[in-house]
Every structure is written in C-alpha cells, then in structure tokens.
Image (cartoon, rainbow, N blue to C red; front, side, top):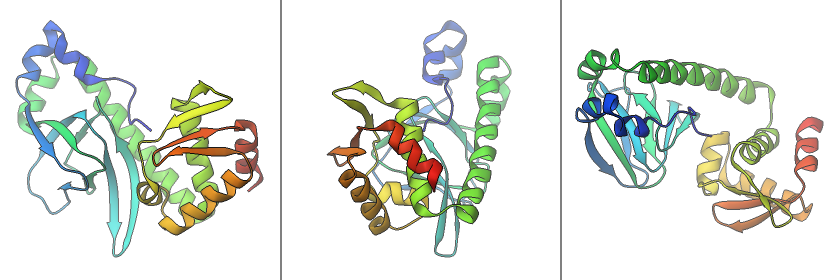
Amino acid sequence: MKLISVNLLRLFETTEGADLGKEFRSRLFPRKALIYSPSDEVDRVFIVKRGRLRVYLSYGDREFTLALLEAGDIFSTHTRAFVQTLQETELLVTDTATFQKRVSEIPEVSQAMVKVLGELLKNSLSTIEGLVFKDARLRLIEFLATAAADRGKPGNGGITVELGLNTEDIALLVGTTRQTISTIMNDLIKAGIIEKIDRQTICVRRFDELTAWKDSL
C-alpha cells in the first residue's frame, strides 16, 4: 500500500540530507482535506511526515484512486491528480524549483521520484484494467490479499492487517460503493475467511482460501 519502500524522512537524519531537510516547512492538514487539485497553480514537492493521503483522478461523479501515500513517501503536485488526506496528516513541503536545485546532490531522492512515477503509471494501468475487466468483489479481494501479503503480521491463528482505512476509504480505493464493500466483507466474514477486529483492522484467518477466491472469480 505504501507507494515506495524507501523512507525519505531518514535521509534528513544524515549529514548529506540535513541541508535538504531545511528547505522543507511543516504543514498540518485535517482528515478529508483536499490539499491539491489540478486547478491549483502551485507547484510543490512534499514528503509525508505522518498520516495518509489518497492520490486520485476525478471525472464527473467518478473517482479513480491511483495510490496511497504514507509516512516517508514523496510526491509532486505537478500532475493532473487530486490529493486528499484520509486522516490528520503532516507534510513537509517545498517548492519544486528549490527541490530541483538540491535533489541532484542526493541520488536517493532522485531514485525515489523515479519510483514514484513508475508506481503511479503501474497503478493507473491496474486501475483501468480493474474497472474494465474485474468486478468489485475481485478488486476488493485482490486489495485484501495484497495488504495481507505486504503488511500483515502472522499470529493468533491468522494474519492481522492494520488497513488504516474505514469502509468508505476502501470503497474509494476499490472504485465502488460503501454498501458493496460492506456486503462483500460480510460474505468473507460469514465464510470464516476474515475476521473484523475493529473499524480499520482485520484478521485473515484463511489466507489460502482468500487467494483461492481471487483466482476463482
């Protein structure tokens, strides 16, 4: 779910990255705040210090999620995408011109930006493929299986996954309605495949069956 594996916040703790860190200023945003849109004229680069954001495209009344940003992720507003917070979020922000002057001094940051662009392209193609060829049930099951594999913690008779997302957030991510998500999740619970721990955490009791459902749809 994290856009890149590198945590750029750690670079600011190094001698090489300390000067770059001074170019960023902290900004705090509440949950569900639309912080950037394609109509904004500002051109910024930001790193997520804490919280979570959704990067998405919007056409009429349809929204298509491209990526989730978490602590340590970097992103540029110089795109056609909207960026919205999913929870209270703190960003480290700088202007693109300043960033471009300093980024060549730190190869890790340049590499991270390339990875961001690559992941956004891959996610864009996956989103299009999913909406065209896959129904909501398959998209949700693929999301849950990937989350369990990437960030799940084995124990207590299953794999505990802190999704950090409520039903509405998952619906936006998968591209369907909240009611549809609730119905599919209840089917998985009744089948004993997952267990709901709280509003944002599940336990996958039968991972093999979850992936089997995915492969059978």
